[in-house]
Image (cartoon, rainbow over all chains, first blue to last red; front, side, top):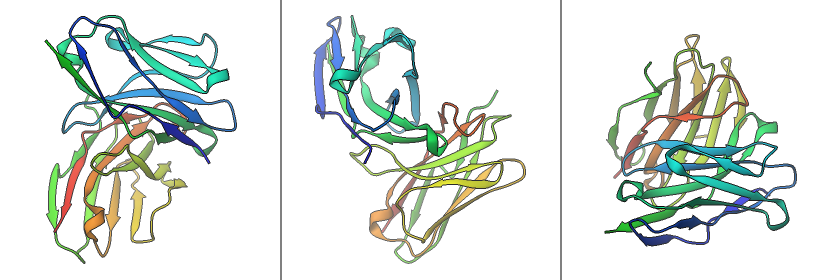
Length: 114
Length: 112
């Protein structure tokens, strides 16, 4: 069965420090992969997506992610974190043969300390 | 242009009651999906509708049902509410059945 694992429930980084959020997926076919961000009481905003091609994808707000098929990973990175990045981040795999059903990980809560 | 709008934003019900949640997609979007997000977990797929037809259903009991109207808006209905139905219910729309999703801010349902 398809699944997404985000091993870190909480991560705390200092403002200006680099960030890497981990995501591993289990999926039999070529995956469509996504990262979403959710602020408290809000819906989900798409940061970036991978469908095919270049394995390093750029997203909004200075985020990037790298798809590594051999490791079944799609880690999210940002070189310098801002206080406004504090939120919950979700990795998801898209089951496009079933429309656009997404299977989400449990999320990683990012705290930014000044 | 307006994004995905959901109503109501908050709702309190008691066990055994019925609830209807509403979603208006982005103008021009023909697909609507529903997700349930329990506190501390990622969203879980409930339904997808495209052109008023059900395209996918998640692992939810028959108490959950949905429909899509000719204007592409959608309703999610939950009967015989249980405490465990307390969650944030998210609606998402897309221009086609397999295009990227745009999420609304959700309806927070509390079942007492």
